[in-house]
Image (cartoon, rainbow over all chains, first blue to last red):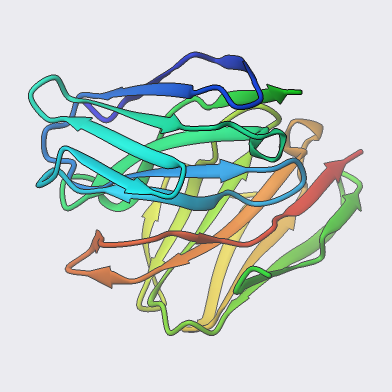
Length: 113
Length: 116
């Protein structure tokens, strides 16, 4: 019930392309869905987050698409850049998860020139 | 720069040593967390403190002992660790409302622990 499944495990995208990472959750009580970006040797940092009252949220080149009925959400990175190369974690939490986040397994993104 | 500060950044210790990891935040957050992260894995929750009281202990071995001296500080005391405890230990903080995560979890840069 608390699991968040993330795919793909790794992703290679050409510069300027679109990176897409998908997540699925089980607990219908989750109401907060953030994406974290982590560079080697650093702690995770919030990239963008969405709540289930909207189906899409866009911040610059980053967009979250949310499908409440399918219990799925995804991160789209438009015009991917080499500086976007990092590990991305989706997560779920909120009132249904108590005072903690449940993380997906992570996606290693590499953007090649 | 992160607003959650962790010290030390790197720590090497033997299995018989006692050491501590420290974390500090000045954002007025009342929830603070310890996570453990192995290479290429997501952070795993260890402990949550809510208003300086331990609210979640994810069945962590007693060789890890958390302490929250005040609302800005969080310590993790380490004793008799095993080599498999080598990992990146992340501290985080967040706002809290009715024991639910209502917003961003702010992570520190972590303390890289190696147990010999």
